[in-house]
Structures are given as C-alpha cells and as structure tokens.
Image (tube, rainbow, N blue to C red):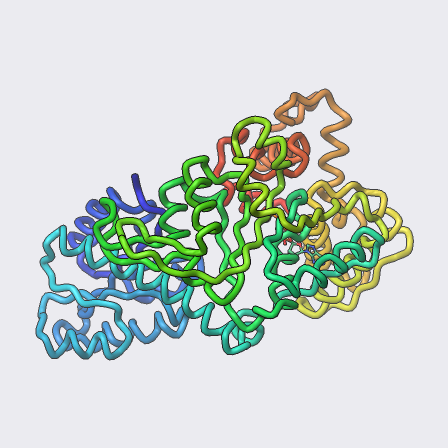
Length: 467
Ligand SMILES: Nc1ncnc2c1ncn2[C@@H]1O[C@H](COP(=O)(O)OP(=O)(O)OP(=O)(O)O)[C@@H](O)[C@H]1O
C-alpha cells in the first residue's frame, strides 16, 4: 500500500525527475517534480510537502553546490521543519557534512541505488514528521504555542447549554479523568479538547492530536504506538508514537468510532497498563497522558452494532461532554456571528455590522454544518461585501442552495432536478455534498463514505463551498 505522503523532487535533468518519479510513485501517494527551483515557493504554498529531494547543481553553476545551499535556505525560510535531502553527482564527504550543517536532513549521491533512495526518503519522512510533532511539543512546553502557531480561538457561547458545557470543562480539567466529547461536525469538539487542555494542570505539556478517521488500521497503530525500524515493509526508520509524544500532556483522538476492533484492543491495553510497546519493539514505554476522545456518532449504538468495544467505551467516557448543535442554541448565534464578523472584518479590513433582520434570519437557519458553517458564511460575506453593507444573499448562499434543493423533487443523493437541464458540475457537487451532510446529520465519516471520498477530500469540498 502507498504511504500517504507528498514528495517533491527538484532537478533540472528530466531523466532524473522521471526516474525518481517512477520509483517513488510506487511507494508514496503524491510525487511532484520540478525542473526549475524558482517554482519551489509556489509549489510549497499549494501542497503540504513532506520531503524535498533537491539537486545541488543547477545548470548555471554546475559543480560548486552553492545553488543547492541557496535553495535549501529558501525552502527552510518557507517551512523551517521540512525534510530536505540534497542530491549531487559530485559527492564528497566535505560537501555532505556542509549540507547537514546547513539543515539538510540527508545527502544522496547520483546515480542512486533504488533501495538507498527509498531508505533515505523514508528516514527523512519520519524525521520531518517527528520534528514537526516535537516542535509542537517544544512550543507548548515553552508556552509559546500561541505566538508560533496562532492562538486557539476561545470557545464562545452564553446559551444555557454551553454554560453547562463550560462548567463540566472547568471541573473535569482539574482531574486526569478521560473525557469523551460528542457532537455533530463543526460543533467545536476539537476546540473543546484544546480548552480542557489549556485549563488543566497539564497545560504546559504537549497537546497531541490524531484523527482516527484519516488513517488505515495498521497506520493508526504505528501512529499511536510508534514503530521500530524493520517492524513492517515500510518501516525504514524508528518512529515515535503519539502516546509517547503526548506524555506529560494530553492525547486527543478524534473520530474514535473509526478505530478498528483490532486496534481497540491495543488501545484498551495501553490505557489499562499506562504503557505502550512500539510495533516491532520489545521494550514497553511508560506513558503519562490524559486522554480526550471525540466522536460525531453515537458510540452506544456502535457498541450495539458490535463495532465498538463496550469495555473501551467505559474506559474513555469517564466524563462525557455533549456539544449541542447550533440549531439547539440559537441564543449563541448572534454572539458567534458578531465574533466572526469582527474577526474577519479585522482580517480583511472591513468595518461591517449585521442588521437586526439579518440576525433574525441567522437565528432561524438550522446550520447543518454548525459553527464551522456559520464562520464560513460570515467570512464569504465579508470578503464579497460592498462597502460596509453585508449582502444577506451572500450570507445565506448555502441556505439558498438547500431551499432550491427542497423546492424540486431531489433524489436522496441530493442532485438538483431542474426543469431545464443545468450542466454545472460545481453546482451538482455542491448540492450532492450538502445533501449527503444533511442526510447523515453532519456526520462527516458517514457522508464521506457515502460519497466515496476520504474525510480529507470531503473537508476540502466543505471548505470550498462554505458548508
Ligand atoms: N463555541 C465556539 N466558539 C467559537 N468558535 C467555535 C465554537 N465551536 C466551533 N468553533 C469553530 O468552528 C470550527 C469547527 O470547530 P471544531 O473543528 O472544533 O469542530 P469539530 O466538532 O471538532 O468538527 P469535526 O467533527 O468536523 O472535526 C473551528 O473553526 C472552531 O474554531
């Protein structure tokens, strides 16, 4: 199976690019190639690249390697922790040492042995990921996370339901009890997990998250517990698991309902024994974590269906926090809308206010995508506003779609059936995604399965259409 990673190969020799691509494509999901290093910046802006394989000598300057060092610096100014493997046909030890000193993760001589290239890429990939995760640990440990990665927004609300949630958060945060947060997509489960961590005695420790919806069973296991080099075919280097990274802090497992039964047994054992053994390892590692899990499906039903272990549910739900959907707390809508109006007003340099009639309309809309949908609606309307007036039609672009769909006999797939055929793919896609989310009451995992998309791909479409 291909590993979910994006690699970028930069070399001015098309044969080198082709050879690298053909080899790496067999093992990694996305392999990008560039024959001109000037395009690196745009490529990194567009793709979340994990490893760059960078030639040291472009045609202007055939052998000194200075161009390679220049581009290495440029790459690190754009992303300081990205793993870069420098490649050169003029290899010598001195240059390898210099490359590593300048921040390269590794050094590769051309022509390469395929096995050697794969090993170096795998090591660089793990190195980069661990560096990212450890960077997060270090930032949090130093209390600098707000400066470096942008402050986590506050969890807002003044409805009775949310005041109750705040109360449970404040009490639970002071303990090490495991917490299960449930709620529809976009209700703020991840934000709540951060809020608990920030109010807890572990606030200075790391907050490490893992989305169980985005990974296959065996990958999940290696992400959770880590692995030793050689534990399985693709394990080309040791890898630190999230349990170990989260030690002293909080481990947040999103979409816990997606954890396959086999891995549920292992998670339960890790929680009971407070230790994990990396795959392929034989020495257990002691862990000290508080576990917060999130789900947008009813886990008791998953237990009844035989998809989730009851003993694991009892272990993770010592405290349960249910986040109500926005339609159940319309009192929060004005507060949230004004918050986002100010936030995006500042971001896009607009000074805009909501009219009382618009607030009433916002409150009347059911917001199937919850707070995420509301924030997207406000952002879109702020960007497209003329002067200081907010156009109600823009604010409710998503609602207009839903109304349009309701007004015509739509199939369960939600494809709009118009009197005149409309050949607008984007519109059909938008309608279908909105209908699937509505059908599964905002459950992203179920909707993505039904649409034949990964959760990531569905999130990208939700983002695109402001759902
Ligand atoms: N009470 C709130 N106050 C302010 N912002 C909120 C609140 N709830 C959610 N948000 C915002 O809405 C967006 C979605 O929140 P979050 O990712 O925490 O939801 P979620 O329930 O984890 O969603 P999913 O199940 O789809 O992963 C984020 O941008 C978050 O900042």
